[in-house]
Amino acid sequence: MIAPEPFATTDPSSIRLTTLTHGGGCGCKIAPKILREALAGVSGGFPHPDLLVGNATADDAAVFRLNDQQMLVATTDFFMPIVDDPRDFGRIAATNAISDVYAMGATPVLALAILGMPVNTLPLAVIRRIMEGGAEVCHEAGVALAGGHTIDSPEPIYGLAVIGLAEPGHIKRNDTARPGDLLVLGKPLGVGVLSAALKKGLLDAVGYAEMLAVTTRLNTVGQRLGAFDAVHAMTDVTGFGLLGHLLEICRGSGLAARIRFDRLPILPTALVLTPQGIGPGAIERNWASYGHEARLSPKLPSWSQRLLCDPQTSGGLLVACAPGAAAAVLEQFHAAGFPEATAIGALEAGDPQVVVE
Image (tube, rainbow, N blue to C red; front, side, top):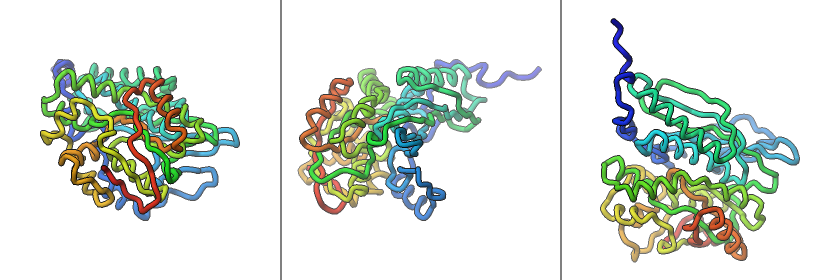
């Protein structure tokens, strides 16, 4: 008699996805320093007159000119489980992938799934729930999920390749900020801390609800902000943390940033767990990559550095806008369901660095 496959005798409800991987969410990203070294000298392909945004400034997505009226925006994002519930994992991964299109000021229209699963050890019911969660988010965003690609892999991986469209004047890059621009952050920080606590069995139901609410909230406000001329630059805060992605804006725009730690929106449970030293290993990797470009006030608590470098999965939009437009930008965030959105600082002339007061 042929023995049944392992997944046929495994109770799907007993599976903890986070125990099957060495990392999770955007904390899986290769450290910024290592990534820069790996990409150094690597050509992005033959120059093309219609490729307007490539990988030169580490922007959120590529932008290709289709014609004088339409820009095509393309991105891909995938990672290992940040939560144990398969449907929630699918929802978070899809929300995170689509965010890159919103961060460019574009409207997502089409997606392809990227799926790698240990098919002989993970129940098919679990794999199906992951894909169902991703499909739900695509439906919510009005994105056509048109297929994808699958492989048998030792660790579960899920994400999307996403295509969006935008008018030429609506594209928002991460290297076009101006001196004096105010910085607005759309979602609270602390997702990486909460995900690490979950993996260690230290996250309660309240903390899980906080994390899920943030990571499954689509950054739809990005496509509205694309129409704002006074929004000069935009990105989303993900695996490199707030400091890392703000530094990308500073480097690309040739500016310095000054932010106030007491203005940062932070998940309540993360404020409790971070001082206890709870958090993913990516925090240290992030700081090692770009800490020399940051200046933290000695008056700040010692754990503030950890939240600034905390890898965010499906994090908030970070917007650089003219001071006179900040109120209108915040109004758009709040109307779109981002009550935590707030102005956290400003950009100024100077060598690229971030000063945290």
